Length: 80
Image (cartoon, rainbow, N blue to C red; front, side, top):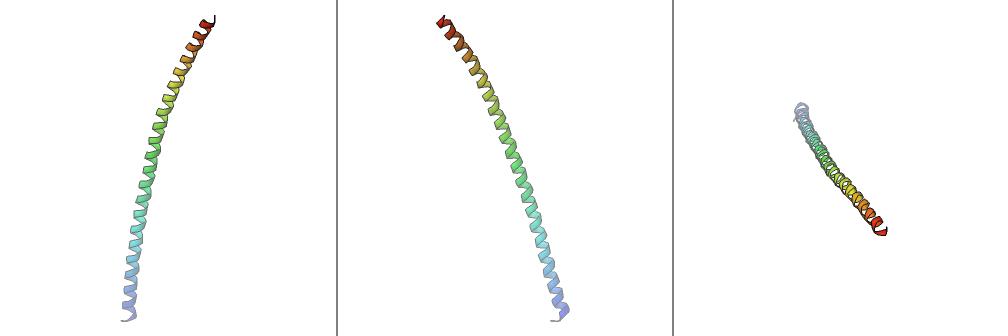
């Protein structure tokens, strides 16, 4: 085998390796993008759940305040 044939084989292999690296990089970029979207969707879901919990806490807090006021009023009536 002469030098030109050997060089041609080596270049073809490098081209093949280069193509494989490009494919790997492309796959990694797709995976990274997919994971970012998953994290974004998860955070959005968590935010919605927290908003719902905060609404319930505010509602219950308001109800508790009203009940405390009524109990206080009744206690004052009983004491008088």
